[in-house]
Image (cartoon, rainbow, N blue to C red; front, side, top):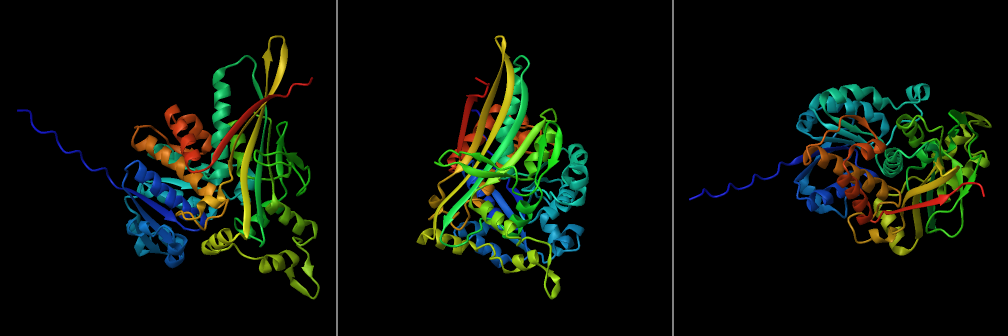
Amino acid sequence: MDPSPATPAAPAVLPVVFFGLGAVGSSMLICLAELAERDEVPLRFVVVVQEPELARDALFHAEWLFDRIDFITALDFDDLFRGDHPGRARLEGARLLVNAAHPRFNQPILELGLAIGAHAVDLASDMYDDETERTLTFSQYSFDESYQRRGLAALINLGISPGVTNFLIGLRLHQLHAARRRELEIESVDLYLLEDIDADEIVFSWSPLVALEELAQRPRLLRHGRLDVLEPFSAAREHVFPGEVAPTRQYPLYQEELLSLHRSFPNIQSIAVYSGGSEVELVKALYKLNLLSKRTLPQQSELTVEAMVRAILPGMNKPRRIEEYLRNGTIRRAHFAAAAEIRYSEQVRRDRQTTIETVGIRYQRYRGLLNSPYAGATYISYPTAVGAAILTWHALAFLMEDGGILQGVLGGEDLARLLPRARLEAIRRDLVAWDLDLFESVRDASPP
């Protein structure tokens, strides 16, 4: 008799460490748990936070996850990174480290990943630190060679924008290059962002302090191979997003996509990021009223106008309050969208034809979060978290299930190049399954 078939070994538990668990981190953790449950992968989380009770409160509709989470209290993350904290030993064996706290922890977490042999993910870079200002390169790239030697991947700037935006742009650019059409030239990539909310209260979808810092910076555009620095809220454009009747005023914005796309596609001479919507218009009003001025107040030379505004500006609402606003109708409508216009020219018959292809993503089903584990997320934190989770999950699956190789410091556009077609299609399907609609179009932009 043939021996009975051996019982399949249970899949190994996948340990994931989160540093910080705010609006984005909590939703990202939930989405990873949902993806793991669907794919029958046992997942366990370690969450490093300063206040565990606040982290638990961020998961107030996902209590079913608490028995899979090991909370570590660390009042000073630096102690943990140095190894001086007793909770450091509980990080050993982690397969993935996620920085859901702040970009300033990117480098210490990358160092930790090398020390314990874990992959790493972050959601944003520090655009305004001295090194990035000087080199126009994210500081995470200094770890590229070390991560390649260790056979580890550091996925940077994931989320919705950058992250999914870079993935979609990179996917289409790689496809155009692979077509090897005669004399095809990518002339420009312009990314337009919509962050629009209609509410009876001032509701910030992300940290108002971060919003002030980012939107009031002098924007930069890459035009004809030259990095131009503009005045804030100048050089505005109009853009019509799918689902919107009227065009939205768009202003240049200095964001991660500019530097990352320029690094990945250095031959593209013009790259720009624009943003518009109700939240941008609010910051614009503050700026135009000189309420973001560095001038000091009369009789109070130690206090600037900007510092006073920052001090009295309402903070970001807690998840329970956001859910209440959505449930009682205080928030009536919200719409996030990102649309990238890729302009290229090629020889067609005897003429040079110019084409604009648009690829993008939008989130308009905000009320659908009610009665879900994500209730309390903002219309920005939800797509940011879900986008990061889906990209991360399929990168991990490629490594651990498909036997693929991802190593070094990689962005969304790199994943579009390195992942196989089946994984790329799975990412697109999962984005739609989690209510993030994709859109694309092609139009002739040649002169008549």
